Length: 88
Image (tube, rainbow, N blue to C red; front, side, top):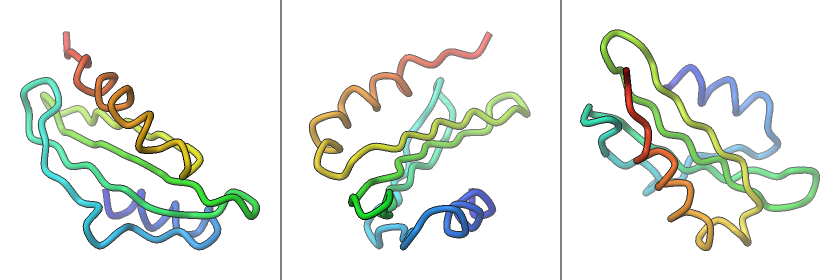
């Protein structure tokens, strides 16, 4: 997760993980972590929301990029996408 965040910091303008943006959660019944970061898409405030889990030796990673003004309204939908994930 830290490598992906470091790469994102190089790619996105003013990329900064929120101090309170880390959260432990589960994905497919396995431990996972999520992070929320702010950045600028051009001059538009935006949010990167990522969730990563290691499941059966494989990484499951979800990355969402969304305008900051829309994040709170869409977060339940984004979380539902993550929560619906199943490993076969």
